[in-house]
Every structure is written in C-alpha cells, then in structure tokens.
Image 1 (tube, rainbow, N blue to C red):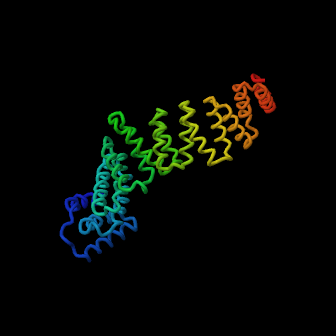
Image 2: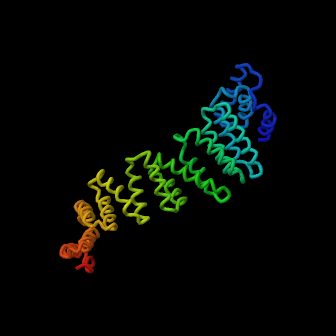
Image 3: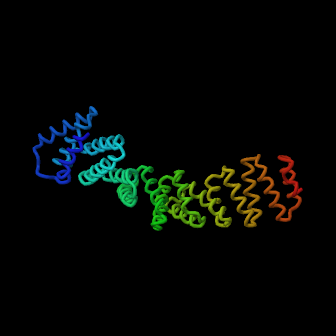
Length: 321
C-alpha cells in the first residue's frame, strides 16, 4: 500500500493536465498493464498505470475512471480511520477528472461526488448539495431517486441555517411526483415539509395543470379539500372522478358526503344511491341516506332507510327510527 501512495504523490502533480502528447503505443501498453492487473484484482499493481494513462490521454478510456473509482472505494473501505480521508480526497480527484474529460457522463460523477462529500466527510454538506444539484440538473429524467432523495434529505437537514432550502426541497419532491405520483417516499417527505393543507392543495393543483387527467392527483386534491373541510371545492374533483369511473363506489360515496356537508341533500342521496348500488353492504351509506331524508323533512323515507340500516346492524339507525 505504501507503494501505491508513493506512486500517487509522484504522479499527482501531472495528473490534471493534458501534458505533451505521448506515443500511442506507450499509452496502450500502460492501459493493457492497468487493465490486466485490475481484472485480476491486483489493485496495488494496477494503480500506477491507471494514473499514467489518466495523465497521458485522459479522454481515451471511459472505463478508466470507473475502474479507478472501484479501486479507491475498496481502499477507503479497508483503510484504518486515520487513512480514510486521503482515499476520499483521491476519489474526488478521480471524479473531477472524469467530469472534465468525459462531460457526457458528468451527471453520474457529480452524483457520486456528492455522495462521497456527504458520507465520507463531516461538515461538507454545502459542497455535497452543490454536487448533487449539478448532477440532477444535468439529467433529472435519468437520475436515480436515491440521489434525488439524498439531496432532499440534506436540504431538510440544513433548513434551519438555510431557510431557502425548504422551498428547494418542496420543489424537488414536487418534480419527483410529477414524474412518479406513486412515489411513497416523495409523498411522505412533501407532507412533512408542507403541513399547511392549503399549501399542499396549491402544490398539487400546479402538478395537475401539467397532467390534468391524472386520477391520483384529482383524488388527492379532493381529499385535501375534505381534510380542510372545504367540501364545496372538493365536489368538482369528485364529480370528475365519478364521470371517469362510474363503477367506483368509493368516489360516489365521497361525492355524496360532500354534497351532504354542503346541504345539497337531494344530490347527496343520488350519489349515495349510486355507491350503494355498487356496494350493497355499505351500511353507513344507508344511514347517511336516512339522515339526508330527515334533513329534507321527509321523515317517512328517513324511517324507511333507518329500518334498512337496522336490518344490517341493530345498533344502526336507532336515533332516526
């Protein structure tokens, strides 16, 4: 291992520049030696040749950087605590060179750089955030959610010192949900960040503007309005769902509930009846229909429906009978 570190110190002053053009045969010879040692797991012998290739022709072999990364990750994992930082520093050098000489793969190297800065050091969250941001910005569509979530977690962790990170975290998870509405972690993070129901409604409505037929979003907005006890505004979303899915008893039931809470009892009865037709065993719907008839002063129908509720469960409908 000492030989590896000495080789690194010897070459480090030369690694970062293109230098004079070397003979192609010499480059291929060094690459062949590097690859053969790397392939057989002799990392200590491979490393000096890897740095030589990186110095001589840094743009030629794309796989060089991933191979060198693998070597130094192993060195880091196996090193005693007092030696780990040196290997982490070297990983950052590898990533910076990969970004410089292979910009088409810059996104993945920025993300890995962010991971190393976050997890292999203390007190470098700001640099990790910058690296994650750059990697995600370069290729959001193909960035693994793991890295996006790491950035979000760092935003949340540092919100007290940097209040602007809250808005950044909200926007980040909103973008994730635009692409993947079923992402449980992103939904949970967003709910934790936005405790104001009104703010959550507005965020989801903005998402709906870009995907107006998204059933999950329509349902989410309707339920958020119900949670805020704004039943009137929930109704249009539930009406849209019942038109799209007329055989869904849950949508009809929720629509009936909102009509009932806004005093539209006839519409509530119609919606509840549609739900009951699909799911005849829903005793709470039978009782709600009875309540609606009572509110319309149609006591005969109220008693009839109360008796139906009691037929399902003797404890249901007693107060209306």
